[in-house]
Length: 68
Image (cartoon, rainbow, N blue to C red):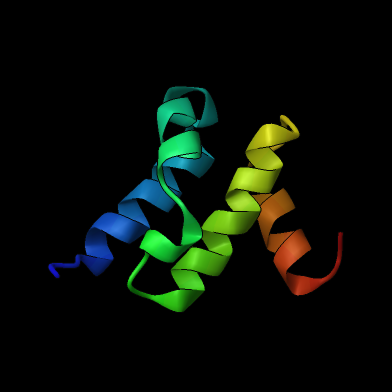
């Protein structure tokens, strides 16, 4: 299987920068698709925050650090 850490980072960054433009990825990409397990964990939180309508760097970061 081919993987790209850079593509994983780009997807997460794009979703955080412009969540409205990444709604297709919300339903198509699952955390287990990520090669890097940390990226999968971050993507899971991004999905959760996108579904709640509040996905941004601060909310995702706070949730992952336990400050939410």
